[in-house]
Length: 243
Image 1: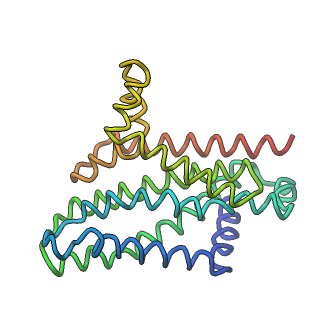
Image 2: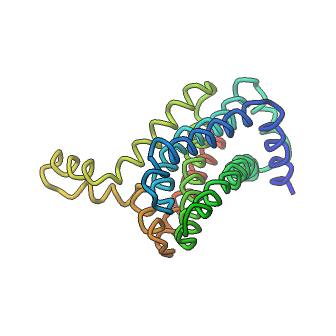
């Protein structure tokens, strides 16, 4: 019940200002432009969304940072966090409620991209299995990046700082999955497979399987466990505020 109360409060806050609408429109417009024109979809004459799903997590590093920057930073800046901590609610209920509100906005944004696969289907015959797993991967990656952003937001009252740190953290986490980066990290550590080890923690390493249309339980476990870990750290950061 407390989680639902926080969820409704935060979800309404997203749409009480034009910020959520602006970010959603910019994200949808930019993603469509990049896929159809920058990546030359119509010229390639290939009805698949592989490049679309490969690009989406990179854009999520900024989009989810913009969504999460206000979750806790604004509470601190306005001085309402202390008041929120005095109500008869547990910290984890507040953390989950806020996170689910952001996750709902993320889910709505993904649903609004349905025009892209419809367009692809009009001009060709796409593999719907790969499209479905691609969307599952995009949602899981966005959920993880949003949890990381919420955690970082809980450590500062400056929304701009939260935005920048979350974006950089997301890009670094994604970059760890690039083979060239992994090779350079291995060389830096004198041939030790440090880069290969770190690559496992990159969403890219797990989105690749989903992009091929394969729903591997190990990838699902990775995203869920990493998201839970980020939310746990978020909870710890909030708990420290009490003392």
